[in-house]
Length: 387
Length: 228
Image (cartoon, rainbow over all chains, first blue to last red):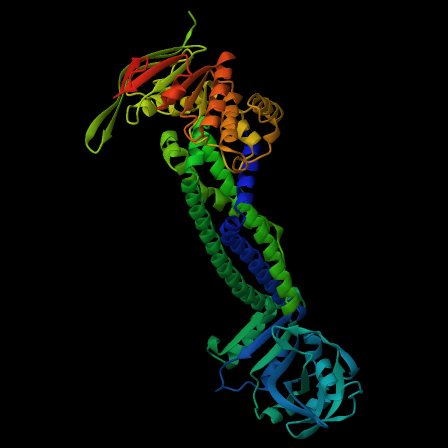
Protein backbone atom coordinates (compact mmCIF):
# COMPACT_ATOMS: atom_id res chain seq x y z
CA UNK A 1 0.00 0.00 0.00
CA UNK A 2 1.48 3.36 -0.89
CA UNK A 3 1.69 6.36 1.40
CA UNK A 4 -0.55 8.55 -0.74
CA UNK A 5 -3.45 6.10 -0.39
CA UNK A 6 -2.81 6.00 3.36
CA UNK A 7 -2.97 9.79 3.57
CA UNK A 8 -6.23 9.83 1.63
CA UNK A 9 -7.63 7.21 3.99
CA UNK A 10 -6.48 9.20 7.06
CA UNK A 11 -8.03 12.44 5.78
CA UNK A 12 -11.28 10.61 5.12
CA UNK A 13 -11.29 9.22 8.64
CA UNK A 14 -10.64 12.66 10.13
CA UNK A 15 -13.48 14.11 8.06
CA UNK A 16 -15.75 11.36 9.30
CA UNK A 17 -15.25 12.46 12.91
CA UNK A 18 -15.17 16.23 12.61
CA UNK A 19 -15.94 17.24 16.19
CA UNK A 20 -13.69 14.65 17.73
CA UNK A 21 -10.86 15.49 15.34
CA UNK A 22 -11.22 19.17 16.19
CA UNK A 23 -11.14 18.50 19.92
CA UNK A 24 -8.11 16.28 19.44
CA UNK A 25 -6.34 18.97 17.50
CA UNK A 26 -7.29 21.69 20.00
CA UNK A 27 -4.27 21.01 22.21
CA UNK A 28 -1.91 21.32 19.28
CA UNK A 29 -3.77 24.37 17.94
CA UNK A 30 -3.42 26.15 21.28
CA UNK A 31 0.20 25.05 21.67
CA UNK A 32 1.37 26.16 18.23
CA UNK A 33 -0.81 29.27 18.32
CA UNK A 34 0.58 30.43 21.65
CA UNK A 35 4.19 29.69 20.67
CA UNK A 36 3.85 31.81 17.55
CA UNK A 37 1.84 34.62 19.15
CA UNK A 38 3.99 34.87 22.27
CA UNK A 39 7.25 34.82 20.36
CA UNK A 40 6.00 37.44 17.92
CA UNK A 41 4.99 39.68 20.82
CA UNK A 42 8.17 38.96 22.78
CA UNK A 43 10.45 39.64 19.85
CA UNK A 44 8.42 42.72 19.03
CA UNK A 45 8.95 44.16 22.49
CA UNK A 46 12.68 43.35 22.33
CA UNK A 47 12.83 45.22 19.08
CA UNK A 48 10.95 48.25 20.39
CA UNK A 49 13.21 48.38 23.45
CA UNK A 50 16.27 48.24 21.21
CA UNK A 51 14.84 50.93 18.97
CA UNK A 52 14.02 53.30 21.80
CA UNK A 53 17.41 52.79 23.45
CA UNK A 54 19.11 53.46 20.16
CA UNK A 55 17.05 56.61 19.66
CA UNK A 56 18.68 58.06 22.77
CA UNK A 57 21.98 57.94 21.00
CA UNK A 58 24.60 55.28 21.33
CA UNK A 59 27.13 57.75 22.72
CA UNK A 60 25.04 58.38 25.80
CA UNK A 61 26.47 57.53 29.20
CA UNK A 62 24.23 57.66 32.26
CA UNK A 63 25.69 58.16 35.74
CA UNK A 64 23.54 57.54 38.79
CA UNK A 65 24.70 58.46 42.26
CA UNK A 66 23.19 56.33 44.98
CA UNK A 67 25.20 57.63 47.95
CA UNK A 68 23.13 60.44 49.44
CA UNK A 69 25.54 61.25 52.27
CA UNK A 70 28.29 62.68 50.12
CA UNK A 71 26.89 65.33 47.80
CA UNK A 72 27.91 65.64 44.20
CA UNK A 73 28.01 69.24 43.09
CA UNK A 74 28.19 71.26 39.88
CA UNK A 75 31.90 71.84 40.48
CA UNK A 76 32.57 68.13 40.48
CA UNK A 77 30.44 67.79 37.37
CA UNK A 78 32.75 70.28 35.67
CA UNK A 79 35.65 67.93 36.39
CA UNK A 80 33.76 65.15 34.66
CA UNK A 81 33.38 67.41 31.66
CA UNK A 82 37.19 67.73 31.50
CA UNK A 83 37.64 63.92 31.46
CA UNK A 84 39.08 62.27 28.36
CA UNK A 85 36.60 61.39 25.64
CA UNK A 86 33.73 63.30 27.22
CA UNK A 87 32.09 65.84 24.95
CA UNK A 88 29.14 67.12 26.98
CA UNK A 89 27.66 66.61 30.41
CA UNK A 90 24.22 67.56 31.67
CA UNK A 91 22.86 67.11 35.19
CA UNK A 92 19.38 65.69 35.46
CA UNK A 93 16.93 66.39 38.25
CA UNK A 94 13.64 64.63 37.74
CA UNK A 95 10.31 65.27 39.41
CA UNK A 96 6.60 65.46 38.76
CA UNK A 97 4.80 68.72 39.24
CA UNK A 98 1.43 70.29 38.60
CA UNK A 99 1.05 72.57 35.59
CA UNK A 100 -1.72 75.11 35.35
CA UNK A 101 -2.78 77.40 32.53
CA UNK A 102 -6.10 79.15 32.90
CA UNK A 103 -8.57 76.44 33.86
CA UNK A 104 -6.41 73.63 32.47
CA UNK A 105 -4.46 71.68 35.05
CA UNK A 106 -2.24 68.63 34.56
CA UNK A 107 0.76 66.88 36.04
CA UNK A 108 3.84 66.18 33.98
CA UNK A 109 7.42 65.17 34.56
CA UNK A 110 9.86 68.01 35.09
CA UNK A 111 13.53 67.73 34.25
CA UNK A 112 15.99 70.24 35.57
CA UNK A 113 19.04 70.39 33.35
CA UNK A 114 21.49 72.55 31.43
CA UNK A 115 21.82 73.67 27.83
CA UNK A 116 23.88 70.65 26.72
CA UNK A 117 20.98 68.30 27.47
CA UNK A 118 19.46 69.15 24.10
CA UNK A 119 22.37 67.81 22.07
CA UNK A 120 23.06 64.88 24.40
CA UNK A 121 19.51 63.59 24.04
CA UNK A 122 19.44 64.52 20.35
CA UNK A 123 16.36 66.68 20.72
CA UNK A 124 15.43 69.66 18.60
CA UNK A 125 13.59 72.88 19.30
CA UNK A 126 10.39 73.51 17.36
CA UNK A 127 9.76 77.03 18.53
CA UNK A 128 11.67 79.54 20.66
CA UNK A 129 14.87 78.33 22.36
CA UNK A 130 16.15 75.76 24.87
CA UNK A 131 17.49 76.59 28.35
CA UNK A 132 20.59 78.80 28.22
CA UNK A 133 23.53 79.07 30.60
CA UNK A 134 22.26 82.51 31.60
CA UNK A 135 18.94 81.01 32.74
CA UNK A 136 20.96 78.57 34.77
CA UNK A 137 23.22 81.24 36.24
CA UNK A 138 20.44 83.58 37.30
CA UNK A 139 17.92 80.89 38.27
CA UNK A 140 15.48 82.22 35.74
CA UNK A 141 11.90 81.01 36.08
CA UNK A 142 11.73 79.89 32.45
CA UNK A 143 10.40 76.60 31.07
CA UNK A 144 10.73 74.64 27.82
CA UNK A 145 7.71 72.45 27.06
CA UNK A 146 7.52 69.08 25.35
CA UNK A 147 5.22 69.04 22.33
CA UNK A 148 2.39 67.07 23.97
CA UNK A 149 2.42 69.15 27.14
CA UNK A 150 2.36 72.35 25.06
CA UNK A 151 -0.70 71.10 23.21
CA UNK A 152 -2.41 70.10 26.46
CA UNK A 153 -1.88 73.50 28.06
CA UNK A 154 -2.09 75.89 25.11
CA UNK A 155 -4.04 73.88 22.53
CA UNK A 156 -3.30 75.48 19.18
CA UNK A 157 -1.87 78.79 20.41
CA UNK A 158 1.81 79.47 20.51
CA UNK A 159 2.95 79.19 24.13
CA UNK A 160 6.06 81.31 23.60
CA UNK A 161 6.32 84.30 26.00
CA UNK A 162 3.24 83.17 27.87
CA UNK A 163 3.19 82.18 31.51
CA UNK A 164 2.39 78.79 32.98
CA UNK A 165 2.01 78.02 36.68
CA UNK A 166 4.13 75.19 38.08
CA UNK A 167 3.22 74.30 41.65
CA UNK A 168 1.74 77.75 42.07
CA UNK A 169 4.60 79.88 40.71
CA UNK A 170 4.65 81.59 37.30
CA UNK A 171 7.19 80.44 34.71
CA UNK A 172 7.80 82.03 31.31
CA UNK A 173 7.64 79.62 28.39
CA UNK A 174 10.69 80.19 26.21
CA UNK A 175 10.56 77.19 23.91
CA UNK A 176 8.73 74.12 22.63
CA UNK A 177 10.49 70.92 21.57
CA UNK A 178 9.83 68.73 18.57
CA UNK A 179 8.12 65.42 19.27
CA UNK A 180 10.56 62.58 19.94
CA UNK A 181 8.25 59.75 20.93
CA UNK A 182 8.29 57.66 24.05
CA UNK A 183 11.06 55.54 25.38
CA UNK A 184 10.54 52.83 27.98
CA UNK A 185 7.31 54.17 29.36
CA UNK A 186 8.34 57.80 29.72
CA UNK A 187 7.64 60.24 26.99
CA UNK A 188 9.83 63.31 26.64
CA UNK A 189 6.90 64.89 24.77
CA UNK A 190 4.75 65.04 27.88
CA UNK A 191 7.41 66.75 29.95
CA UNK A 192 8.88 70.15 30.76
CA UNK A 193 12.49 71.29 31.12
CA UNK A 194 13.75 73.88 33.62
CA UNK A 195 17.19 75.38 34.25
CA UNK A 196 18.95 73.07 36.71
CA UNK A 197 19.29 75.72 39.40
CA UNK A 198 15.60 76.66 39.10
CA UNK A 199 14.57 73.00 39.34
CA UNK A 200 16.74 72.50 42.44
CA UNK A 201 14.78 75.23 44.14
CA UNK A 202 11.46 73.79 42.91
CA UNK A 203 12.28 70.25 44.06
CA UNK A 204 14.11 71.53 47.13
CA UNK A 205 17.37 69.66 46.67
CA UNK A 206 20.93 70.92 46.36
CA UNK A 207 22.87 67.99 45.02
CA UNK A 208 23.12 65.99 41.83
CA UNK A 209 21.86 62.40 41.77
CA UNK A 210 22.00 61.76 38.06
CA UNK A 211 23.76 63.16 35.04
CA UNK A 212 24.18 62.34 31.38
CA UNK A 213 27.48 62.47 29.56
CA UNK A 214 28.06 62.24 25.88
CA UNK A 215 31.14 60.54 24.48
CA UNK A 216 32.90 62.20 21.59
CA UNK A 217 32.06 59.28 19.36
CA UNK A 218 30.98 55.67 19.59
CA UNK A 219 34.57 54.41 19.76
CA UNK A 220 35.41 56.60 22.75
CA UNK A 221 32.42 55.45 24.85
CA UNK A 222 34.47 52.98 26.86
CA UNK A 223 37.32 55.44 27.24
CA UNK A 224 34.94 58.12 28.47
CA UNK A 225 33.30 55.69 30.87
CA UNK A 226 36.67 54.81 32.38
CA UNK A 227 37.56 58.47 32.69
CA UNK A 228 34.24 59.29 34.34
CA UNK A 229 34.67 56.43 36.80
CA UNK A 230 38.11 57.79 37.70
CA UNK A 231 36.68 61.23 38.48
CA UNK A 232 33.80 59.69 40.42
CA UNK A 233 36.17 57.54 42.49
CA UNK A 234 37.86 60.71 43.74
CA UNK A 235 34.64 61.62 45.51
CA UNK A 236 33.29 58.20 46.29
CA UNK A 237 35.63 55.53 47.60
CA UNK A 238 33.06 52.77 47.23
CA UNK A 239 32.24 51.89 43.64
CA UNK A 240 28.74 50.80 44.79
CA UNK A 241 27.93 54.45 45.47
CA UNK A 242 27.55 55.27 41.81
CA UNK A 243 26.96 53.54 38.52
CA UNK A 244 28.24 54.42 35.09
CA UNK A 245 26.33 52.74 32.27
CA UNK A 246 26.16 53.24 28.53
CA UNK A 247 23.25 52.51 26.23
CA UNK A 248 24.77 49.21 25.20
CA UNK A 249 24.63 48.04 28.81
CA UNK A 250 21.07 49.26 29.21
CA UNK A 251 20.11 47.54 26.00
CA UNK A 252 21.75 44.29 27.03
CA UNK A 253 20.05 44.38 30.42
CA UNK A 254 16.70 45.02 28.75
CA UNK A 255 17.33 42.31 26.21
CA UNK A 256 18.22 39.86 28.94
CA UNK A 257 14.88 40.59 30.60
CA UNK A 258 12.80 40.28 27.44
CA UNK A 259 14.75 37.21 26.35
CA UNK A 260 14.12 35.41 29.60
CA UNK A 261 10.45 36.40 29.42
CA UNK A 262 10.29 35.03 25.89
CA UNK A 263 12.00 31.82 26.96
CA UNK A 264 9.57 31.42 29.83
CA UNK A 265 6.51 31.97 27.66
CA UNK A 266 7.85 29.67 24.97
CA UNK A 267 8.50 27.02 27.59
CA UNK A 268 4.90 27.22 28.77
CA UNK A 269 3.66 27.08 25.20
CA UNK A 270 5.93 24.11 24.56
CA UNK A 271 4.41 22.31 27.52
CA UNK A 272 0.93 22.91 26.13
CA UNK A 273 2.15 21.44 22.85
CA UNK A 274 3.29 18.37 24.75
CA UNK A 275 -0.08 18.13 26.49
CA UNK A 276 -1.69 18.41 23.06
CA UNK A 277 0.41 15.46 21.95
CA UNK A 278 -0.80 13.41 24.89
CA UNK A 279 -4.37 14.33 23.88
CA UNK A 280 -3.69 12.96 20.42
CA UNK A 281 -2.30 9.75 21.87
CA UNK A 282 -5.34 9.40 24.10
CA UNK A 283 -7.79 9.77 21.25
CA UNK A 284 -5.79 7.49 18.98
CA UNK A 285 -5.85 4.80 21.66
CA UNK A 286 -9.62 5.15 21.95
CA UNK A 287 -9.81 5.02 18.19
CA UNK A 288 -7.79 1.79 18.05
CA UNK A 289 -10.15 0.16 20.54
CA UNK A 290 -13.21 1.37 18.65
CA UNK A 291 -11.90 0.20 15.34
CA UNK A 292 -10.65 -3.19 16.45
CA UNK A 293 -13.10 -4.86 14.11
CA UNK A 294 -12.03 -2.71 11.20
CA UNK A 295 -8.43 -3.65 11.92
CA UNK A 296 -9.46 -7.31 11.97
CA UNK A 297 -11.21 -7.00 8.61
CA UNK A 298 -8.24 -5.23 7.08
CA UNK A 299 -5.88 -7.87 8.39
CA UNK A 300 -8.05 -10.72 7.14
CA UNK A 301 -8.07 -9.13 3.73
CA UNK A 302 -4.30 -8.95 3.66
CA UNK A 303 -3.12 -5.85 5.53
CA UNK A 304 0.30 -6.43 7.04
CA UNK A 305 1.32 -5.10 10.44
CA UNK A 306 3.24 -2.39 8.65
CA UNK A 307 0.12 -1.28 6.74
CA UNK A 308 -1.96 -0.95 9.92
CA UNK A 309 0.89 0.80 11.72
CA UNK A 310 1.31 3.24 8.86
CA UNK A 311 -2.43 3.92 8.70
CA UNK A 312 -2.65 4.96 12.34
CA UNK A 313 0.65 6.83 12.33
CA UNK A 314 -0.33 8.84 9.29
CA UNK A 315 -3.68 9.57 10.86
CA UNK A 316 -2.12 11.05 13.99
CA UNK A 317 0.50 12.89 11.94
CA UNK A 318 -2.16 14.40 9.68
CA UNK A 319 -4.21 15.37 12.74
CA UNK A 320 -1.31 17.12 14.41
CA UNK A 321 -0.09 18.83 11.26
CA UNK A 322 -3.59 20.09 10.55
CA UNK A 323 -3.65 21.31 14.15
CA UNK A 324 -0.24 22.90 13.60
CA UNK A 325 -1.47 24.77 10.53
CA UNK A 326 -4.63 26.01 12.29
CA UNK A 327 -2.48 26.95 15.28
CA UNK A 328 -0.07 28.94 13.11
CA UNK A 329 -2.97 30.84 11.56
CA UNK A 330 -4.51 31.55 14.97
CA UNK A 331 -1.12 32.58 16.39
CA UNK A 332 -0.56 35.09 13.59
CA UNK A 333 -4.10 36.39 14.00
CA UNK A 334 -3.73 36.77 17.78
CA UNK A 335 -0.45 38.65 17.43
CA UNK A 336 -2.02 40.93 14.80
CA UNK A 337 -4.98 41.65 17.06
CA UNK A 338 -2.56 42.42 19.91
CA UNK A 339 -0.60 44.72 17.62
CA UNK A 340 -3.73 46.64 16.65
CA UNK A 341 -5.33 46.86 20.10
CA UNK A 342 -2.23 47.45 22.25
CA UNK A 343 -0.32 49.37 19.61
CA UNK A 344 2.75 47.23 20.27
CA UNK A 345 5.39 46.13 17.84
CA UNK A 346 5.29 42.47 16.79
CA UNK A 347 7.93 40.59 14.84
CA UNK A 348 7.11 37.35 13.00
CA UNK A 349 9.97 35.06 12.24
CA UNK A 350 9.51 32.38 9.61
CA UNK A 351 12.04 29.97 11.16
CA UNK A 352 10.15 30.00 14.45
CA UNK A 353 6.82 29.40 12.74
CA UNK A 354 8.29 26.57 10.71
CA UNK A 355 9.90 25.11 13.82
CA UNK A 356 6.60 25.26 15.75
CA UNK A 357 4.79 23.55 12.89
CA UNK A 358 7.45 20.86 12.51
CA UNK A 359 7.48 20.32 16.25
CA UNK A 360 3.72 19.74 16.20
CA UNK A 361 4.13 17.22 13.39
CA UNK A 362 6.87 15.43 15.33
CA UNK A 363 4.72 15.44 18.48
CA UNK A 364 1.90 13.83 16.47
CA UNK A 365 4.17 11.14 15.08
CA UNK A 366 5.85 10.37 18.40
CA UNK A 367 2.58 10.17 20.31
CA UNK A 368 1.02 8.20 17.44
CA UNK A 369 3.62 5.45 17.60
CA UNK A 370 2.24 3.67 20.65
CA UNK A 371 -1.43 3.53 19.51
CA UNK A 372 -0.32 2.51 16.02
CA UNK A 373 1.89 -0.21 17.46
CA UNK A 374 -1.02 -1.44 19.58
CA UNK A 375 -3.28 -1.53 16.54
CA UNK A 376 -0.74 -3.42 14.45
CA UNK A 377 -0.25 -6.05 17.14
CA UNK A 378 -3.91 -7.11 17.19
CA UNK A 379 -4.44 -10.70 16.08
CA UNK A 380 -6.91 -10.91 13.17
CA UNK A 381 -9.05 -13.65 14.75
CA UNK A 382 -9.35 -11.76 18.05
CA UNK A 383 -10.05 -8.52 16.25
CA UNK A 384 -12.76 -10.11 14.09
CA UNK A 385 -14.42 -11.68 17.10
CA UNK A 386 -15.12 -8.32 18.85
CA UNK A 387 -18.44 -6.70 18.18
CA UNK B 1 -7.75 -36.19 -11.14
CA UNK B 2 -7.61 -32.45 -10.57
CA UNK B 3 -4.88 -30.89 -8.49
CA UNK B 4 -5.35 -30.59 -4.73
CA UNK B 5 -5.52 -26.97 -3.55
CA UNK B 6 -5.71 -27.72 0.14
CA UNK B 7 -3.81 -30.56 1.74
CA UNK B 8 -3.96 -30.92 5.53
CA UNK B 9 -2.16 -33.71 7.30
CA UNK B 10 -2.55 -34.48 11.00
CA UNK B 11 -3.41 -30.90 11.87
CA UNK B 12 -3.85 -30.33 15.60
CA UNK B 13 -4.92 -27.32 17.58
CA UNK B 14 -5.46 -27.20 21.33
CA UNK B 15 -6.63 -24.41 23.60
CA UNK B 16 -6.30 -23.85 27.29
CA UNK B 17 -9.73 -22.97 28.59
CA UNK B 18 -9.90 -22.31 32.31
CA UNK B 19 -7.11 -24.79 33.04
CA UNK B 20 -8.73 -27.43 30.81
CA UNK B 21 -7.08 -28.49 27.56
CA UNK B 22 -9.55 -28.47 24.67
CA UNK B 23 -8.70 -30.38 21.50
CA UNK B 24 -10.31 -28.06 18.98
CA UNK B 25 -8.79 -30.01 16.09
CA UNK B 26 -7.66 -33.58 16.57
CA UNK B 27 -5.39 -34.91 13.79
CA UNK B 28 -7.35 -33.54 10.88
CA UNK B 29 -6.68 -34.88 7.38
CA UNK B 30 -8.36 -32.93 4.63
CA UNK B 31 -7.77 -32.62 0.90
CA UNK B 32 -9.74 -30.27 -1.30
CA UNK B 33 -9.35 -30.32 -5.08
CA UNK B 34 -9.31 -27.31 -7.31
CA UNK B 35 -12.79 -26.36 -8.49
CA UNK B 36 -14.52 -28.17 -5.65
CA UNK B 37 -17.44 -26.82 -3.64
CA UNK B 38 -17.00 -28.25 -0.18
CA UNK B 39 -19.12 -27.55 2.83
CA UNK B 40 -17.90 -28.15 6.33
CA UNK B 41 -20.75 -28.67 8.75
CA UNK B 42 -20.78 -29.02 12.46
CA UNK B 43 -22.56 -27.79 15.56
CA UNK B 44 -21.12 -24.95 17.58
CA UNK B 45 -18.10 -26.01 19.60
CA UNK B 46 -17.25 -28.70 17.09
CA UNK B 47 -14.06 -26.95 16.03
CA UNK B 48 -15.30 -25.71 12.67
CA UNK B 49 -14.41 -22.09 13.42
CA UNK B 50 -10.90 -23.15 14.36
CA UNK B 51 -10.66 -25.16 11.16
CA UNK B 52 -11.84 -22.20 9.16
CA UNK B 53 -9.29 -19.91 10.83
CA UNK B 54 -6.53 -22.33 9.93
CA UNK B 55 -7.75 -22.83 6.35
CA UNK B 56 -7.99 -19.04 6.06
CA UNK B 57 -4.46 -18.57 7.42
CA UNK B 58 -5.81 -16.40 10.28
CA UNK B 59 -4.35 -18.89 12.73
CA UNK B 60 -1.56 -21.46 12.74
CA UNK B 61 -1.85 -25.13 13.62
CA UNK B 62 0.04 -26.44 16.64
CA UNK B 63 1.27 -29.43 14.66
CA UNK B 64 0.68 -31.14 11.36
CA UNK B 65 1.19 -29.79 7.88
CA UNK B 66 -0.96 -27.56 5.72
CA UNK B 67 -0.22 -26.91 2.08
CA UNK B 68 -2.29 -24.23 0.37
CA UNK B 69 -1.97 -23.81 -3.39
CA UNK B 70 1.44 -25.40 -3.47
CA UNK B 71 3.02 -23.55 -0.52
CA UNK B 72 3.40 -24.90 3.00
CA UNK B 73 1.80 -22.29 5.21
CA UNK B 74 1.90 -23.97 8.62
CA UNK B 75 5.27 -22.51 9.55
CA UNK B 76 5.03 -19.10 7.93
CA UNK B 77 5.51 -15.84 9.79
CA UNK B 78 2.66 -13.39 10.37
CA UNK B 79 3.64 -11.03 7.58
CA UNK B 80 3.85 -13.89 5.08
CA UNK B 81 0.46 -15.16 6.23
CA UNK B 82 -0.97 -11.69 5.55
CA UNK B 83 0.39 -11.95 2.05
CA UNK B 84 -1.10 -15.44 1.57
CA UNK B 85 -4.50 -14.20 2.79
CA UNK B 86 -4.28 -11.31 0.39
CA UNK B 87 -3.22 -13.39 -2.62
CA UNK B 88 -4.91 -16.76 -2.21
CA UNK B 89 -8.01 -16.41 -0.06
CA UNK B 90 -11.24 -14.50 -0.43
CA UNK B 91 -13.18 -14.22 2.81
CA UNK B 92 -16.96 -14.07 3.04
CA UNK B 93 -18.23 -13.55 6.57
CA UNK B 94 -21.56 -14.13 8.27
CA UNK B 95 -21.96 -10.46 9.19
CA UNK B 96 -20.44 -9.21 5.91
CA UNK B 97 -17.65 -7.24 7.64
CA UNK B 98 -17.72 -4.32 5.27
CA UNK B 99 -16.11 -1.05 6.33
CA UNK B 100 -18.98 1.30 7.10
CA UNK B 101 -17.26 4.54 6.16
CA UNK B 102 -16.41 3.39 2.67
CA UNK B 103 -18.55 2.96 -0.42
CA UNK B 104 -19.23 -0.46 -1.91
CA UNK B 105 -16.61 0.16 -4.59
CA UNK B 106 -13.98 1.20 -2.04
CA UNK B 107 -14.69 -1.90 0.02
CA UNK B 108 -14.14 -4.06 -3.03
CA UNK B 109 -10.91 -2.17 -3.79
CA UNK B 110 -9.46 -2.89 -0.35
CA UNK B 111 -7.63 -6.18 -1.07
CA UNK B 112 -6.14 -4.61 -4.18
CA UNK B 113 -4.97 -1.58 -2.17
CA UNK B 114 -2.98 -3.87 0.13
CA UNK B 115 -1.61 -5.63 -2.90
CA UNK B 116 -0.35 -2.30 -4.24
CA UNK B 117 -2.40 -2.27 -7.46
CA UNK B 118 -2.43 1.13 -9.19
CA UNK B 119 -5.56 3.27 -8.72
CA UNK B 120 -6.86 3.06 -12.27
CA UNK B 121 -6.53 -0.68 -12.63
CA UNK B 122 -7.85 -1.16 -9.11
CA UNK B 123 -11.04 0.79 -9.78
CA UNK B 124 -11.64 -1.04 -13.05
CA UNK B 125 -11.21 -4.46 -11.44
CA UNK B 126 -13.40 -3.53 -8.47
CA UNK B 127 -16.11 -2.37 -10.86
CA UNK B 128 -15.92 -5.67 -12.77
CA UNK B 129 -16.33 -7.62 -9.55
CA UNK B 130 -19.35 -5.55 -8.52
CA UNK B 131 -20.83 -6.17 -11.94
CA UNK B 132 -20.24 -9.91 -11.53
CA UNK B 133 -22.40 -9.93 -8.38
CA UNK B 134 -25.04 -7.73 -10.01
CA UNK B 135 -24.41 -4.54 -8.03
CA UNK B 136 -22.96 -2.29 -10.71
CA UNK B 137 -25.48 0.45 -9.90
CA UNK B 138 -24.71 0.46 -6.18
CA UNK B 139 -20.99 1.17 -6.42
CA UNK B 140 -21.25 4.57 -4.68
CA UNK B 141 -23.53 3.38 -1.88
CA UNK B 142 -22.36 2.83 1.64
CA UNK B 143 -23.06 -0.46 3.43
CA UNK B 144 -25.81 1.11 5.57
CA UNK B 145 -27.63 2.14 2.40
CA UNK B 146 -27.72 -1.46 1.18
CA UNK B 147 -29.89 -4.45 2.18
CA UNK B 148 -28.34 -7.48 3.88
CA UNK B 149 -28.29 -9.46 0.65
CA UNK B 150 -26.69 -6.58 -1.22
CA UNK B 151 -24.07 -6.18 1.51
CA UNK B 152 -23.20 -9.85 1.24
CA UNK B 153 -22.90 -9.47 -2.53
CA UNK B 154 -20.47 -6.58 -1.99
CA UNK B 155 -18.53 -8.82 0.39
CA UNK B 156 -18.45 -11.57 -2.26
CA UNK B 157 -17.27 -9.03 -4.83
CA UNK B 158 -14.52 -8.01 -2.39
CA UNK B 159 -13.54 -11.66 -1.97
CA UNK B 160 -13.42 -12.05 -5.75
CA UNK B 161 -11.42 -8.87 -6.36
CA UNK B 162 -8.10 -10.41 -5.44
CA UNK B 163 -8.72 -13.39 -7.77
CA UNK B 164 -7.99 -15.81 -4.96
CA UNK B 165 -7.48 -19.56 -5.29
CA UNK B 166 -10.25 -20.28 -2.81
CA UNK B 167 -13.33 -18.51 -1.53
CA UNK B 168 -13.77 -19.14 2.17
CA UNK B 169 -17.34 -18.49 3.29
CA UNK B 170 -18.16 -18.56 7.00
CA UNK B 171 -21.92 -18.89 7.47
CA UNK B 172 -22.54 -16.59 4.50
CA UNK B 173 -26.31 -16.86 4.88
CA UNK B 174 -26.43 -16.79 8.67
CA UNK B 175 -27.70 -13.22 8.84
CA UNK B 176 -30.06 -13.39 5.85
CA UNK B 177 -33.69 -14.42 5.32
CA UNK B 178 -34.40 -17.62 3.34
CA UNK B 179 -35.18 -15.87 0.04
CA UNK B 180 -31.97 -13.86 0.13
CA UNK B 181 -30.08 -16.93 1.35
CA UNK B 182 -31.16 -18.80 -1.77
CA UNK B 183 -29.96 -15.91 -3.94
CA UNK B 184 -26.57 -15.85 -2.27
CA UNK B 185 -26.22 -19.61 -2.50
CA UNK B 186 -27.21 -19.46 -6.17
CA UNK B 187 -24.49 -16.85 -6.68
CA UNK B 188 -21.92 -19.06 -4.95
CA UNK B 189 -23.01 -22.07 -7.01
CA UNK B 190 -22.69 -20.01 -10.18
CA UNK B 191 -19.19 -18.92 -9.14
CA UNK B 192 -18.32 -22.59 -8.54
CA UNK B 193 -19.55 -23.47 -12.02
CA UNK B 194 -17.17 -20.81 -13.33
CA UNK B 195 -14.37 -22.83 -11.78
CA UNK B 196 -13.92 -21.23 -8.33
CA UNK B 197 -12.98 -23.40 -5.40
CA UNK B 198 -15.35 -22.70 -2.54
CA UNK B 199 -15.11 -23.80 1.07
CA UNK B 200 -18.32 -23.16 2.97
CA UNK B 201 -18.56 -23.40 6.72
CA UNK B 202 -22.04 -23.70 8.18
CA UNK B 203 -24.20 -25.39 10.75
CA UNK B 204 -27.19 -25.35 8.38
CA UNK B 205 -27.64 -28.67 6.53
CA UNK B 206 -29.98 -27.10 3.95
CA UNK B 207 -27.21 -24.74 2.96
CA UNK B 208 -24.56 -27.43 3.16
CA UNK B 209 -26.45 -29.60 0.63
CA UNK B 210 -25.87 -26.98 -2.08
CA UNK B 211 -22.21 -28.00 -2.07
CA UNK B 212 -20.91 -30.90 -4.12
CA UNK B 213 -19.16 -32.46 -1.16
CA UNK B 214 -19.93 -32.25 2.52
CA UNK B 215 -17.54 -32.86 5.37
CA UNK B 216 -18.75 -32.89 8.92
CA UNK B 217 -16.75 -32.06 11.98
CA UNK B 218 -17.52 -33.11 15.53
CA UNK B 219 -15.33 -32.80 18.62
CA UNK B 220 -12.41 -31.86 16.48
CA UNK B 221 -12.63 -34.88 14.18
CA UNK B 222 -13.59 -34.94 10.51
CA UNK B 223 -15.94 -37.34 8.76
CA UNK B 224 -16.93 -37.48 5.11
CA UNK B 225 -20.64 -37.10 4.41
CA UNK B 226 -23.39 -35.93 6.69
CA UNK B 227 -23.21 -37.34 10.15
CA UNK B 228 -24.86 -34.90 12.47
